Image (cartoon, rainbow over all chains, first blue to last red; front, side, top):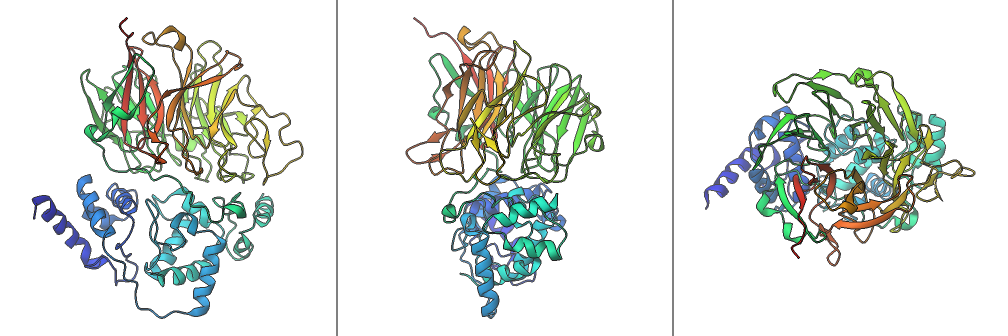
Length: 173
Length: 408
């Protein structure tokens, strides 16, 4: 194992406590990182390190982490498989979420299977409560560092629809 | 005004939820990203290009892919300015300031002759893309903040003066990142973009170009109907401001094209949201006689080209035929199935804007066969020796273009 590789293994250990050893979070409010697009992970790690995302605990962990390690961490997590939680499916809520996703054309950017691409995150299999809160935070301009286009896409969508969307997306593989 | 926004939203096919939202939430603008996406494009896979937020070393820049006219040479001048785009020289000409969007930083690049060093002046700002310099002071404008650094060239640790309140920036963020420049009148010119792809802006504070006294007083709206200008310069003969403007999205591969405009007097209307390019009425936001009294462009600049910085050449290094010619960076398309632009072009036109001719100058950032790109030229600055700097927002680099007459 190269020294650089060992260093990244060490860094990833620090992430595992919250985001899961395999990148699939089992903690409320903490997102899964597994199978996220590499550019998306790079961007969010950089923005967090820079203090733009306003996440003080995360920024402290990433302080001084050089770009090459950011890239290695992003590569590591993007290659891990997504394992959606085993929560039950509410058929009505799932169907409603699917309809809202179609109506708002979320799949143009996040792709029809919602596995994301490039700078646009994977939504399929992400934690339900995390997705609902992230969308609400975007719409309420509480998500620093977020893309203005994403915030704009969610304007006017009620919170109940975010809950349905989150339920639907979190159950996708 | 929300009535208007509501009527507009209900008119589009996908915004049923807005009605519910208005009833139970605080009033919100319509979902502007989706506006104007016709049903025929519901299965589209077009999305904005991802930026790169990590450093790129000079050795990793494929400079040999770039093509310039005979006698011109390109070299990497500086690297490490992740996301760097607009450039403003300090008074000494030895310091260059660079704004960014997503990464939230402003850079200072110090030219030590044979090499450049880079430091971050300020970070954690919301898209501080606007930088301008006058009388010893650096002006930085983010979407929601205006800062001034007095005497920064001599005193790198100077604390900024917060001038935000004086500029009265409106709340909508989209298309409200800034390009900034001081005019020959010593006033600060500031654009306020339309906060959407296509919409009637929620208030009159958007889709316009303004100028201010350097302290933020004396604001004047000097032009309206401007969707998103990200670059302007003053014509070396007439002193008139010429500016680039981005056309709207989701009307197909062929347009409406971006624009190069000329402001021959204050108060002109350039058409947004009703009239685009060379007089194309908008199919979504309709008005009778949509293009009446609209000032049409000097030239259209290509579909979805993302036309950015403009610099009239006034140096004495390039051949005579480049004197007074506009160099314009086109960052390249996303809302188009076949990628377009990703280049620097020249526009040669009369001082009245007549007879404009576009000629490719710096190409090779894009591979048309593979439909891929590696760099996105964004802004142009002129060095004292008459060479030009071109910033590449994708790779966080600056390239220098020089000329020497080919040997006969």
